[in-house]
Length: 342
Ligand SMILES: Nc1ncnc2c1ncn2[C@@H]1O[C@H](COP(=O)(O)OP(=O)(O)OP(=O)(O)O)[C@@H](O)[C@H]1O
Ligand SMILES: [Mg+2]
Image (cartoon, rainbow, N blue to C red; front, side, top):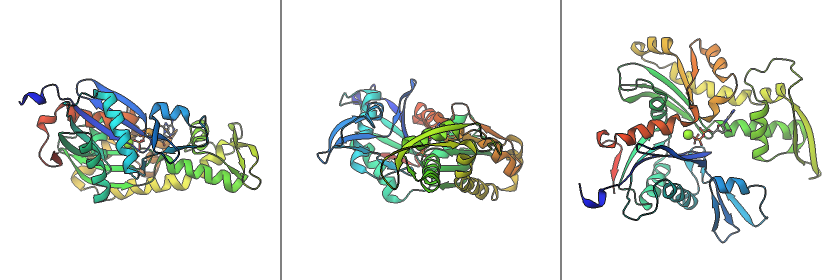
C-alpha cells in the first residue's frame, strides 16, 4: 500500500433530499444533518450548513437565502451541493489534505446521466480516491439486515423525503426496481395544498411537515374530531396572519392521493416478481425503510392493500446509510462494477 493511502478512511455518503448522512468505516454514522445551506443574499457567502443552518431558518434577516441543494432525490444546485458535501465530509473525517477517502455513495435507481455525474463530480472535487455507487434500495435492504446475498427474495420500500425506491433484491443485486419522485415532501405539499384550498391559509414547508408529524395517520378513525392542531400562516387573500384549527381526519384525507402513488410503485414491482421468488415475499413480507416509514399505519395500509406482511425496519431512517456503510467496511471486497477511480 502506498504511504499516502495509510490512514485513508473508507466512508459511505448518503446525500438525501432532507438529510445527509455519513458513515465512517468501523465508526458508524458520524454525520446526520439536514441537507440545507444558508447563503447571504446574492453574494454566495456561506453562513451555515446542516444543523446550524436549520437552526437559523425563520430567525434570520431577509437578505439570506435558504438553499436545499437536492430536490426529488437528486442534486439541483450543483455549487451548493458541492459546498455542503465538502462540509459534511470534512466534519466526518477531518481536513488533512492527504486523507483521500474511498467513498460508497447511494443513488436513486432512476437518475439521468447528468444527475449521476453531479454526484460523482462533487465527490471527485472533494478528493475522493475511489467512488463506488450503490442503489439506495439495495443499501436499504442491506442496512435492514436482510439476507441480500442469499438466493432469496427480499422486498424493500425506502420512502425518504424526495423519492420512494421499491426493489426486489436477491443474490447481491437488484432483480427488479422502481423509483418515483414522490415521498415525504410530496406528502407535506399535499397538506399545504389542502390548507390553501380549504382554509385559504398559506403555510411554510416546516409548518406543513410539523402538521404531518402531529396529525397525519394513514388510517385515521372516521369521524375522529378530537385530534386537532392549530395551524399558523398567512391569509391567502389579505396576507395577514391567520390561525386555523385542523383535524386529523382532514389531514389524512389530504394525503390519500400521494399515498396512492406510493402504493402504485409497490404494485408495479409486486406484479412483476418472478414466480420462484414470490413465495419468499409472501412469507417474509415487505420491509419499509426511510424517514417516511414512520408515518403511522403506513405498514397496515400496505399490508391490507396487497395481503402480504409489512414491517417497518429498525432504525428505518438510517438503513440506507447503514447498508452503504457495511459496504464501506468491506470496500476491498466490492466488485469493479460501479467503481470509479480518480
Ligand atoms: N414520524 C414521522 N412521520 C412521518 N414522516 C416522517 C417522520 N419522521 C420523518 N419523516 C419524514 O421523512 C422524510 C425524511 O426521510 P429521509 O431522511 O429518509 O429522507 P432523505 O434520505 O433525506 O430523502 P431521499 O432519500 O428521498 O432523497 C421527511 O419527509 C420527513 O418529514
Ligand atoms: Mg434517503
